[in-house]
Image 1: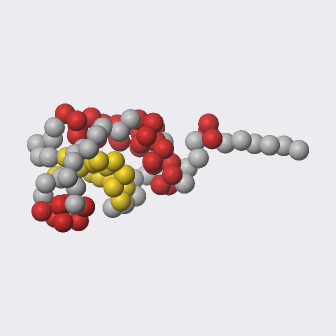
Image 2: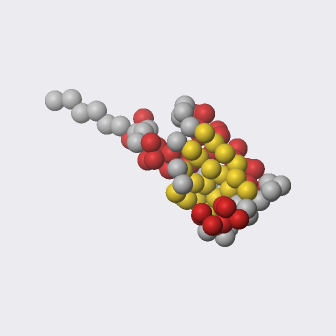
Length: 96
């Protein structure tokens, strides 16, 4: 899995914060994935993603967040859904 954080080069504080949050969540969830910082204004990125607002976060080529800093909980939810991980708080065991 590849997680991309988009922002200008040099990076702005909002984009750097987004990158920090993504790296923190990947570490917390112990995911085996690659986290990349991508220049949002390169011709290739504009052509591929059509991004207008930064920061933005994409997972395996699909943009999930754009134009704002996501919260830690939001990134956790996105990554859990993307990799089909259920958080401990969502598990219910019913014994009969």
